[in-house]
Image (cartoon, rainbow, N blue to C red; front, side, top):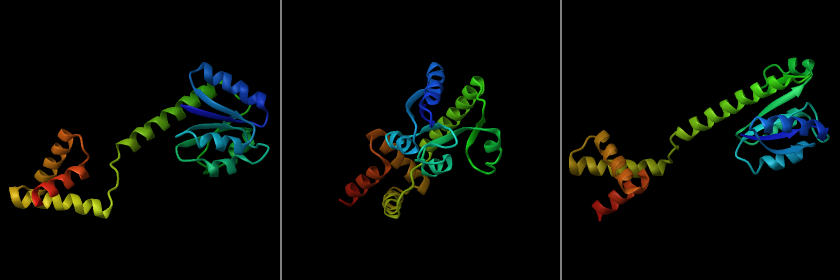
Length: 181
């Protein structure tokens, strides 16, 4: 799991990095400014940002508003600050920071990000209107010429797609060009 640490005092960030690296987390950067953290995030596809309440150039909320997709925030702050963030989708750990709480929270967040990533990978991609029409035309042609139901035609295209190693749309295009000639 990619981790970026942002604390105004570099020493605090390095201490957290040492703890996380010992537990197997992949700390990509330790920064003292939000801008530098965002720069590092642009190179990654997701992860966890562990940060304090404020940095030299911005507050945690400004950083949160700029997080690229796939990133979650773990805020390390005083009890007052943690209690005042009602309704924000930020995980917060109160200071003084306890190592076991940090590690448990990071493992929980990493697990949730991993599950979300797997769920998103399984979602079928949305097809454009043109792609739907192409697939529909291939099915209609198979239904008319081979007396198939729509479901049978769809399964036939799926099987051809898997057998030939092409995607569904390429297979539908191939069917249309072979039959229509």
